[in-house]
Image (cartoon, rainbow, N blue to C red; front, side, top):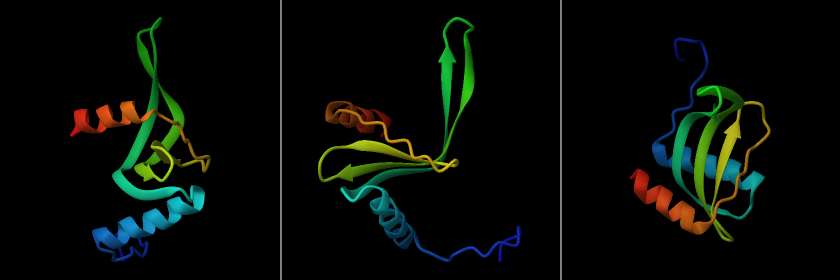
Amino acid sequence: MSQTGKLMPNLDQQSTKMLNLTVLQRIDPFIEEILITAAHVTFYEFNIESNQWSRKDVEGSLFVVKRFLSFFFLINVANCSHLLPRFLFHFYFNFVFDVM
């Protein structure tokens, strides 16, 4: 058990990836592979007039996935409404290689 008293699964990285893939495929059966993951992300919006960032009600794990049909980002948010913004392949390709 962890210090918080929760029972933590003892999975290796590949098993965790396969488990996440199975869960994501329940949401979208066209997902073929998980390319990139982030354990926790939060969305912010920038207000140009006030020159400030404001936190939005969107947070959770981020998965960049390869689909049979097209690419898109999947954010599994804490409030259980999944955010599925679609991007063009060209944008995705540039994004991945600029980040890496």
